[in-house]
Length: 281
Image 1 (cartoon, rainbow, N blue to C red):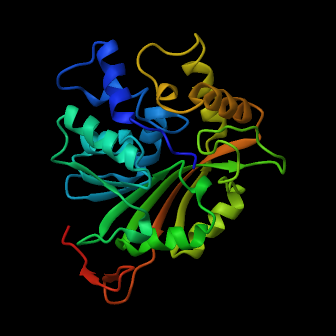
Image 2: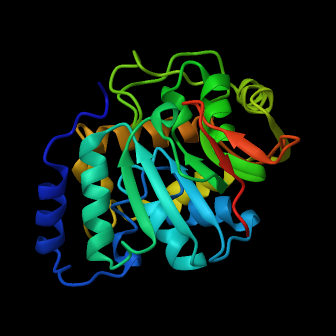
Image 3: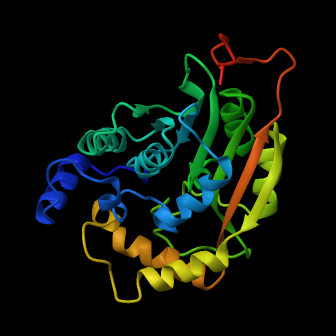
């Protein structure tokens, strides 16, 4: 399994102490550590801006990693955010970092896949960032996300797609050897999302912007402070490989915004057969 790092929370704690980051933290102090995607916090801001989230919103972060996007969303918008991830170590680390930032009243995490997540009420928005590359049955996965959104709920994605029919050089951030990698073209990914019950409102190739981000971020070598590569097996090699593939235009990053096509009765049926009323907003 690609995401099999152990003792992540202990490693995070050590790195924070080594860099003098103790006591209550500002989430911005963690931007190089907890944003598990190309583009970092700036890419996240580009992704969530079209949602116009407020404190009335409930947001589902699917594949929440170390919790950086969830904390940023809560800090910037006041929305409550629930993150789910299939890697237990990441969920523990995300919860610990959230406590260190004093945001546990707005941000929570759960060790779960989307198909096993049964919320008490549906969400107004969902976000996924660099997750679907590990998902083989993408239409079913996005349909499960749609089931957990209220009618006209929105989904935003920031995801890697292939641009040429040639093998990637592994390890990559999402796969050590390629055996669990399911990267598709932008057209294929768009078809998978819309077939799952979403209307496409925006679908933008952000490859050029990500190229500039890699150049700027690593122009002087690795940035100072605790960084994400320090937490991953072969983390520095993975970072180099994705940057090289992006520069070679073998892959690109697509940003999308979608609206869930509503049900006639305004109620959502969850995967376990239960039903929940659409929340008042």
